[in-house]
Length: 425
Image (cartoon, helix red, strand yellow):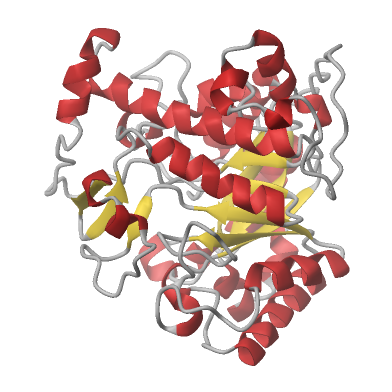
């Protein structure tokens, strides 16, 4: 397919000017915990007060990168980090990651600080990740998040803390879990699906547990942003062999008078999480960004006139993630949809989806990054990506004027094939 055919019909779209807000917000002072009247309020108090809500969701205070060149660094299964189990070796790993990211010309790192119930930062609430030492909640001899942030900033890179909110375990039991593991403390909050354990978003206390976790990071670490990926309710089984059970049916029945169906109920629970995370982050540090990298299809046009001209899995209906509402309500400061398909993919063409997200970013005045799945270049037999696929993606991004950059998955692919870096830019 020739480039001119790929680019046919793509027009340049102007950015919408940011809306202004006359309510004055005191700038963040990282050495003080009492910064504004809002900082001392509970989330409920803020959400019940229109003036406070207007202030905390006012994006004009955010420091949002308008030329994002990011890389996701995954810790689940130790995909990217850590490969070793001691301070000296792990610091060498971190140094190497930062050196590579900088040398490749990227400007931001999205580091997975919470892949499951264990974490990569010092917490009064959550256990240390077993990936660090081989045993959950065994205290490492250094603070990996603090070291990673300091070194990233020293090298001129932004650092975003990436969390997976609901996943508790990558296996279907709590063997090896510490006494601080949330699954041990609240086993009634859990449900099992496809060999993993998750928090039930409908359980009372789950949202507060998660936003208190985020508050620890924001208070104690000099992060540039908080970042969520695409995992909300778990993905459906591809062969449709395993159904997502109605583990939350009892909770739904108590509130079903409010909702048309259980899907609306589940989306409402995820909305509560997103809204509260935004409040917790921005009442403490109004300048840092909060964003989400959702699955690349919100809804298909056959399901919703606002949807994209696609016919793939819909995050709205299957993961219960209503990203468009989060953008409209300004609960998130940017969106980074994972458009992990090639241009010729019939049910989800790359160009079609980038153009759709570009338009929604314009309509909602939401900064947009495109999540790029370059890992598919590793296995051309499975994915059948042409050699020039990544370069063509770059061209399509650049001519969609509301696209403010990209975030790359995965780091290991770039290590094996660094020439892809030039195609990405």
